[in-house]
Image (cartoon, rainbow, N blue to C red):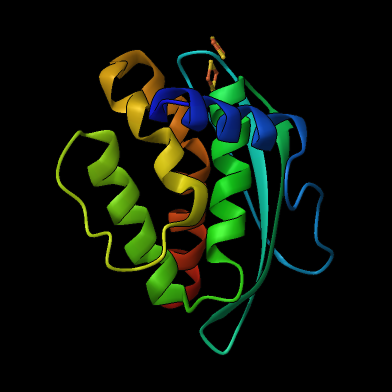
Length: 142
Ligand code: FES
Ligand code: FES
């Protein structure tokens, strides 16, 4: 199968079988929406000693936004907050079609790289990542 087909399958798998769906109790809650369509995400993060101990999301949105949220939670769980932010900047570069650091394990995230060709969809793909950045940055400042 060619890469595009493989990537599409990975995206649909995350959409149909989202990882880390739900809401964590007693945790940092970040709500974010995509103003262009009104779709929304609620991300809950359990941050302890600089580590993302757990992450869950729920929301309503298109297949790109929901699969990206699933991949994002999968990628950051168990990582340091700094690595989570680094993954976010790598993802942002990927979405801008720039070169990105692939020396760390990106897991399924790379399946979304084709979105860079569709500017209107980039906001869909980055919604969950923006929520995660906001949450971690607020924790760092507190
Ligand atoms: Fe939402 Fe295509 S998946 S517009
Ligand atoms: Fe709304 Fe993608 S169309 S987040």
